Image (cartoon, rainbow, N blue to C red; front, side, top):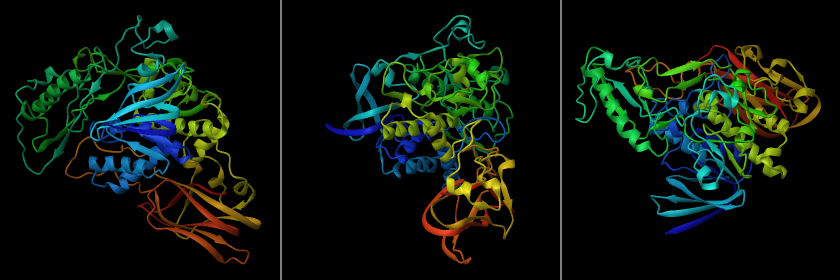
Length: 563
């Protein structure tokens, strides 16, 4: 057997959306990173193996940006037919594009070497290559969801529901237990132009009438999230047991819809069914701070705020599919948004262990809001950025300069509630004919410059000035009402496209003191909200000239800055 050795700054374990965003952010900020993923594809619950669409914060203008929005828009651009294999490829491409990032797929972390309260290295097995990989790193980020490094390192963790009295919460039970939210196997259906029969496997369950599926909406526009089990079992060690039961239920539900009454699916066929359950909850680390229900309800105004959530406290009953007393979950209200601190991503007792995703240091009640994938993604980006800053500044993650980290995240198009981005000196000192593009706020209709054909935005300097970077943020319609991928495939798909509001073609011009354009950058097929251009200009003014959009009849720009 081969045994390959790596010495790196950051080892990320888990290639779901949190791990992917963590690894990309860290590598973009200049540190060597290894990403270990135990599956052949990235994305975790969002991948082609599970196919849960990505949810995030509710509320106007609260959509997550940064790397998450970059990935969404890349998918709409590269994958207009909404093929899950191409979605997998978009995620793969994002990881492989980073020169500081080593990606290990099909690789399972199985051991850790400790030196007192520090992880020295982890060992992982790559099945298809019959290779052991040993990774020595300065920091280890567990983004695995199930917190695999907890039992391997001795890190403190929580499992199950705390008692109400533990954190003075109202959502948990009176007495603590080891029950969790369960896991789901999803299935997808596709509409055809003809009637399609369905014969279930002999081992599928049978549901003769709607009365056999109480409180369970089952229609062609559903993603069948309520086919859920495991919350009363062990959501780690009973995963295969859950899968076996979930498959029987899935086939039984589709048999019911096709063959037991009229559910409007005569022309629909089951196209895909998942054999890998998507998990909601298992181990949660104990961090420097444990976020609880009260923090959620008071909006999480933490001094070290580095990310936010805004999903309701969506607390699924542990019995899942077999809960029959009402709707399968309770949506307890949560602010939109509420803040999450860096401290909830740093281990309490293992010095170089950090984490992002659904396994952060939160109570069960707080988890019910913070666990959704877009939130996990921005947590990952915040963590990767924080580790890179710590390594560059020669300090621990716990002691990073928080205002500096917050400014870096906002500079990378990560929204932080109640914070405003500091503008470059050159942008502040120049004359600008549209001040709204330099107010440090990159979302909200009130922060948009809106123009029509022929309109431009221009910065003018008192003397020739050196310009090294152009920063642009366009309008990708953060209030669009569709996800990254669909849950089913009708004959005609009318959503899931690049936003019409997005600027497609534009030119940035460097102009000398005589009014002559002496340098320019021209883009004719833009599909991103956040764009940076590195330049080397000495000019008297810089002008943005929008040329076309992806369908909107106005040009919409949040930010145009010069550095």
